[in-house]
Length: 81
Image 1 (cartoon, rainbow, N blue to C red):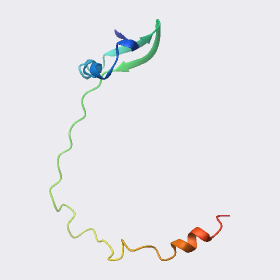
Image 2: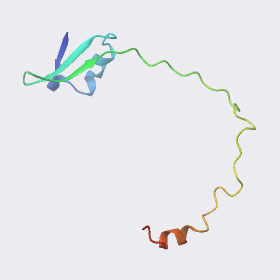
Image 3: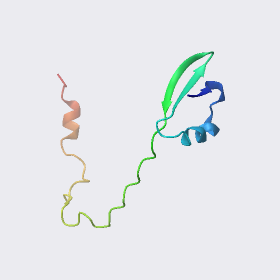
Image 4: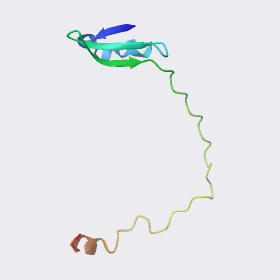
């Protein structure tokens, strides 16, 4: 099992974990004690891009959706309980 000391970790060592084989455990230690167990996993699969206009004609936006709420001031003045 691989092991790395917490003091040896930094942003530069992120590459170490990127090359950890899938299923391979690695312990992170400090002063002789184990802090964490990290297990390598496969890289996430990238999503296929959706074509432009995929939901054309299926979504509608109300003409007043961006207007201020008329009862907002009243709602703020009413007691909650």
